Structure formats: C-alpha cells, structure tokens
Length: 497
Image 1 (cartoon, rainbow, N blue to C red):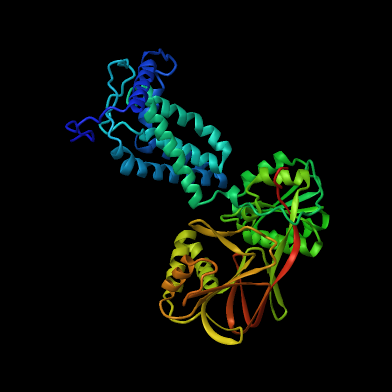
Image 2 (cartoon, rainbow, N blue to C red; image 1 turned 180 degrees about the vertical axis):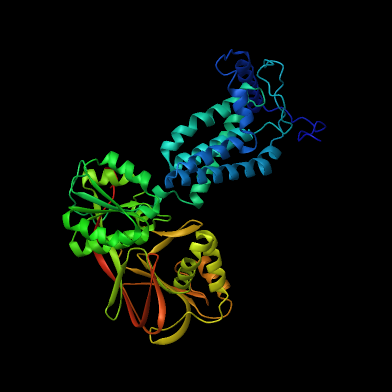
C-alpha cells in the first residue's frame, strides 16, 4: 500500500496570500478540535463512516424510490447522477492536482477519531463533494426532498472536520465541486420544472373547492388505491368510481351523464378513453396519473394528487390539441402518439406473451421477435411514392429532446403532428436504433421527420396494425391523421397559482 502523498517532493516556495490562508485554515481546524460538541459525539463519527463509498446516499435514494412518486424517483436518480459525476471529478483530478497532506490528529480528541484513517490526499473532501452533489441534485428536482436531505448532507460535511480528517477549506472546496456537478448534470438533463409546457391557451373551468361535481373513474388494474385515498382526502366531495378495465368505458359514460367535471385515474389507455367521452359530452377532463408511464399527464404538468387537487380547487386549466385518426368509418383519437409499422406489432406480441412470462420479459421477447423479421411491416404511399417502412410515428405535438434523455412535448397546443419515418431496408434493429439516436429533425438514410397539421396515407395493406396511446387496432386502405386544435379542456396547475 502506498499513500497518495509524495513525501519526497519538495515543498513549494513562499507565497504570502496562500500562506495566510493556510494558516487561517489550520487555526480554524484547531479551533473546531478544541470545542466541546457533546451532542455530536455519538452521531457525527458514525455518520461520517456511513457515507464511505456513497453507501448513505445510495440507501437514501432507495428510500426515496420506495415512496413511489415520480418526482421522488427523478430526484433520487438526479442525486445519484450528480454524486457519480462529483466522485469522478474528485478521483481523477481533484485529489491528484492538489496533493495536500491530511491534518495532524494531535488536537483532535481520541473519541472523535475514525478507527480507519484515510490515506488519500486531503484536498478536496470527497465525502463533502458527494454529500453536496447528492443533496443539490435532489433539491433541483424536488425542493421538498432537498429540504429533507440537506441537513444530513451538511452534517456529513461537518463530520469530516469534527473527526479530524479534513481541514475546513477541504470541505468547502468539496461542497463547491459537488454543487457544480449537480448543475452540470442539470445542463445535460434538464429538470422537469425546466420543461413545464406553457400555460396557454387558458381554459375557463369551474372551480370546485371541495370537489363537488367531480366524478373520477379509476382503473383498479393500474394499482391506484393509494392515489384514490389521497384524492378523497384532498377533495372529499368528489365522487370516485373504482372499476375493472373491462368496465372503464361503461362507467365513464355513466359518470359523464351526472358530472360537471369528468375525472380519470389510470394509464394512458384509460385516459384516452376518458378523453373520448369528455369530448362527446363537452366536459372538462381532470387527469390523475395512475399508470406506468403517464405521458400525457406528465407532459401536461400533472404529476400527482397535489397538482390535480390544486388545479380543481382553483379552476386552473388549459386547452390542448387532440390527434385523430380515421380509416373509412373507423375513427379514434390519440393524446400522445399514433404509429403504424414495427411498434404496433411489438405491442401485439407483448400482449400475447405478457400473461405467461410477465410485462418486462414479454417486452424484451417481443422486441427480439419483431426486429428479426425479414418482411417490412408496412408499405404505404407517402407523398405520392410507394415505399417500405419499418415505422411511421405521429406525435400529438412536437417532441423535443431534453439534453441526453428521450424527448417530451413542451407545447400541447402547437397545432402540429410530429411525423417521423424509419425507412425500410436490411438490418431493422440498426435502423431503429439509428433513428432513436438521431434528433427529431435529423435527415438520414434511415430516418426522416416533419411537422404537419394533417397526414394522409394510402395503399395501407389489410390487417396493418395501428397503435394509439398503447391501444392497437387494424386498418387498411386509406388512413388519415389530423389535429383537432385546442379541442379538449383539461385541469392543470398554472404558474404562480
């Protein structure tokens, strides 16, 4: 074993300002060592050890994830990403650029000292960097969780001086580096708050202070029991109807007949069914996310009971576009996406295998089976030219990338269909991956994209599958995709409300 400190290296020459700062740093260290901290003695050394190798923060992130709220999960992931970047910077540049020895432990009481002393260089403090990075990363995504984590992070940083393993300047520098790492991660992957869609056009919606007049139909198969209980607590006069998936459409029709506001709790497919009913009856829609992905609710800015109940109580909402597909007399709407080609076949395969082996294994198996097929799932006449396609995707609104993560919509009333095409050819898996990596406006041999208000496809082969908001149907002949601008009024909390 060899320490990072080179004891044979020559000491640097005199430098007045640096020497004064180092002297002040040593005096502060000695002052802290001489203080009597009775409340800290049983806590800080243990807390300092628990943060070794980030164990404390990984455990905290796991506890946050168990809370099952999307914001907590995102905050935990952002905290860990910030911690990882800070640790990488500390271990590759920080410790090796300023090779400062550890403090002398003589003034530190033996009861405070760690049993195993670190042998790396002192500047900057890796524990402080990790603590600050995790806490700042969490706070950038969720201020509430940040307020919970911050005191723990501060205590870990202070414990490094208390136990005598770092000078105060080591801790300050580490904390600054950790916070810088969290903001660097935010620059790469913006927080959800940075991409909240504009609150326009605003809708004139009824304010229901206690929820009277709101009828919420919830899909029990989505595991929404805890959210339903929370909704009843915040809006006690609201009526909640719990039903099985097969009864959702029937219960939505019944609810619409007696409701001032139609509510729904479930996944994107359930929300799609509720939107159809709300459009037919001219009712505003209140969406409580209760599925796995909840694309529409999250792009809208509604993440849970707190967001929805606030909007309902205050009558806050907007009007959003609705996508519509038609094939002969067959019609349907989509709030998120509509696609033909590989993806609908993948959905069909996944539904076929899911009851036997479970959801995620079925998805992997479906992707493998679909990508290995030799035939093109779609041949369509697109803008007057017949061509083979692996996938045609149409989004209800323009999808944008958020740094390095998959895209989301910043405007749900932009009047556009975001159309993307993956051309046919050999090696479909490589083509689909290339299209996924490419930006939304990139042109390539495998991928093309355009934003339009209406799209007409002709020559669609009989039995072609079309997927819309997770549902699948068969189409043939002529298929038209179009926008219904600002057709649906939905509740969402408005900025400054």
